[in-house]
Image (cartoon, rainbow, N blue to C red; front, side):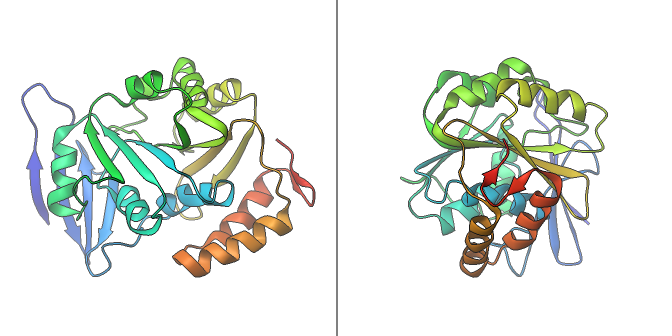
Length: 258
């Protein structure tokens, strides 16, 4: 059932909202799901990849400043705002209709001292704010693939420059995208191959964590304990994520081989 459709003249992909079996979805110019919210549990993270992106907490447990490029329905933004009281979140979304839909249909709260949502160019924001964030989350897609401005080597270098020492950038990639190897190679080149991959269990999303020095010094046992604590606090399946990262990356008792 389609609830909402809007496209401004000369603007980006049209924003559409649909509902099926108790879940509300946001789409941009096609059937692909950009965001989802379970109506009876609107503050939870419905899509697994959004929960996986919160895995930055394993490496940066108390960030002060977090930037989010690509708002979608605002699931990640409102989860951080509700659960990480010490963090300030700066969200950039280029399509004003997406911001309107997030607030009208997905319960994204209004701006306050810990949440700022701007309509603007996320790539330009990253370039303009070096050394300003502990965490950077990048999830900028159109109907088909990652937005071009958010996938260049120059952009990924700016992402690293935006991080404070010890910061982490988190990129949502589609493993099924024919350009995935190109994007991954660019991130590796920008971050000196200091990366970890976390593939989604059910879909083709691959979350890439990229680190600014000093690198995390946490072995598997340490991460496993932290994952149990975060699962108890936020009801996120972090132990499963850590096990998956261990399988896909070189993780030993002395820490990650980054």
